[in-house]
Length: 458
Ligand SMILES: [Zn+2]
Image 1 (cartoon, protein in one colour):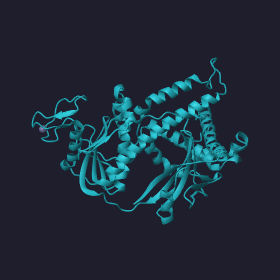
Image 2: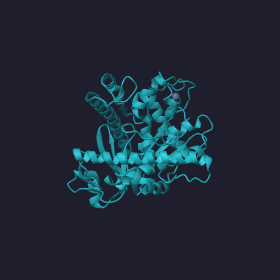
Image 3: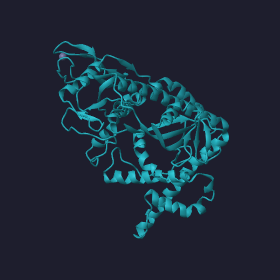
Image 4: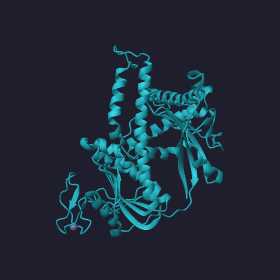
């Protein structure tokens, strides 16, 4: 099967290269902010004069940019033209999302009108789509347009091997910075070999939770690493330290250059946050890869994360576990490995039903960790009971997976959703937008979704 896949590597740029990297992401930000200001100005002008044209799409924005760049950015030649293009592409995407959200044709929460990107605050990136983009044969360097040969922090072996074998092709490269480190992410077209799970005939239910990251119906329990919880004391201390340093705001309300101590404290805090995110991501990838490689069918429960996070006592633990990511990762890893993922309906009572006799309880509080059936006397761990119910779900209504997408069974409102959770009603009915948010892909998912449209950038 041919899939779009990203390979992301940390970079070890020289100080000179760091300057160039920052210059390119800065250029992208500049073009974005310039374009946004232009759009706002034109929108205001159009109120008085209906004939005013507002640039809205990437080609329109680029035409305007090419006309104005010599005046607004005489230094534009210092960076690749793709830097400006990717900034404008991001703006066009933001405008399109806003328009679609307003028209009710876009999944997920309401999108606001694009806002200015601020240096050091917003996510910075720059996307290249034209040569030279390559991974060097020594597997420790990459080559990017205008930036040249940059050392990678880790081996590029996984991608390099595929390119040498002819099973991967690089479509684009995106540079970004986070947690004080530079990264390059290659968007690739990859030919994946047909695989079969180790136990193709086995279906398992997986209960994703806060207490444990996951409980599999086989009885396997995967602990929640809760990296945020483990690092909370350190984060609090580092935040306090930062607050004591002389920052960029002076007491009078103006701006001042921040002290060196402040900059160092800020970098320390950013590194801790990055570390927490890395630990969480690692645990989630390990769990989902393991499940996808082993079992033919994985059944999960549809989660209403947005609703659950509104419970303030649970919010941090839920966010810390990254529960929602489990579904997103399984959704592509299961088909990649020859298996399938099935999502149970949001209102399937997996926790309240006895996995032995099928009797449903009227009430089961979150504090009850052991499921105790009054009808048949079955006693087992609450999450294991839920996982077993999910595993048994398929026997009720078997489903086919034609498009390698997720399938929803049980309950009324059976629906097939595509990877972007599109086909949405305008979220008028109170609950509906939040359900969408929980079931649709996370922020990362949406990003890969737009990769294709950005690909036509330059
Ligand atoms: Zn029972």
